[in-house]
Image (cartoon, helix red, strand yellow):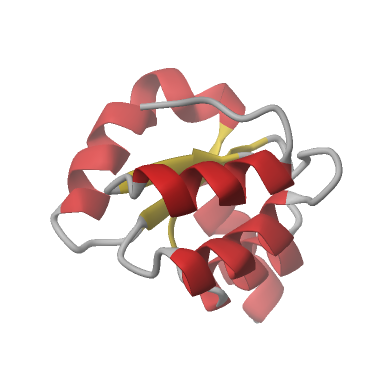
Length: 109
């Protein structure tokens, strides 16, 4: 439906285009992906958000899921996990990349 080069543009496009699914990077300029997701929740709460990022910090994973992200996929795993992740998220599931879910569990111990 569209692409955005920064977080503010992502929010504006979500508000105007009302997509079912949004792929969002954490490291967006002007407004990072977490901030954009928070604002997207305000303007289009029905959108399902999958974060596709290089950031594997368990705190970011938790923050992304806490603000309503339905998926968190490490970019290096996107070729093998993205299509499956989209299907899972569109069917009301949640997906966290295997590499990320391992580190998330370890950080919780």
